[in-house]
Image (cartoon, rainbow, N blue to C red; front, side):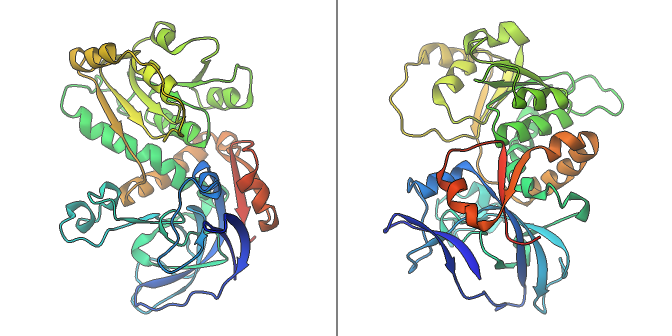
Length: 371
């Protein structure tokens, strides 16, 4: 079978041939890969900033945003059957008995850091014709989502953030006055930092929860991402027109900031615009850049006096994957053209080097393994 892999020691990216994996355990499932999304993590691994091959291997098969179709199941499989569409989860538990999170099935909160991740850390990813995985790591997807289901995994980032947000805000009377048919965020304002795939998918999740949502990005409007934001009922503000320190004065009190840009300076400057009892969610990981100057005293003062919270979130558990499937289905019904438009292009494997090593373009580029 064909696989796309990096060779860290040789600092090389190659399309290789490998033996197809076989069913070995009673709960194994053979999945024919259909599509794999290309993201910033993949490009950073291809730049050899990180990425760890499995023990004893010289290469790491890439890919963690995927969609597959069940081709074969072992005798003990009960959750899926041949023909089902599935999205595989990424992170797998650490081996330590003392890790309460992993032993409870919440490896997305692993205490030890010895977890493994498909296509990132010590496990082959999904950029292969065929993958074999245990059924417990496969999340079924309705056939109606076939055209956009490759977006499920990146959407889980926002879904996990929202799940944590609701838990955190239960500590105070944050809920809005009840209105039939309205969701939790209907009288709250959220700002999304960044208009890449993770940011725009976050905007979708926030809008589905009735947040008054503003996408805050560098590029001046009009542009395609501003048009997308407006098409789902969100506003778009350029940081070139409104600096972070003036954002609250421009849009009003901010209850949630969903950071999806990986730009530390803008993130911490925007934090100064948070309102009382608000939450700032970090999802981006900044690259190694020069130090930035921060008003640490002002930031600390606001955190204390305004009862603010800051949290970081990465990867996701099954609850976030299942929420992503539900919300993607709802979003496709509500904004079909906008959601479909998040997939900027589908490409044959022969273009893998261009997509993984070249400059990022569009919103979400996808490699196709099967029709």
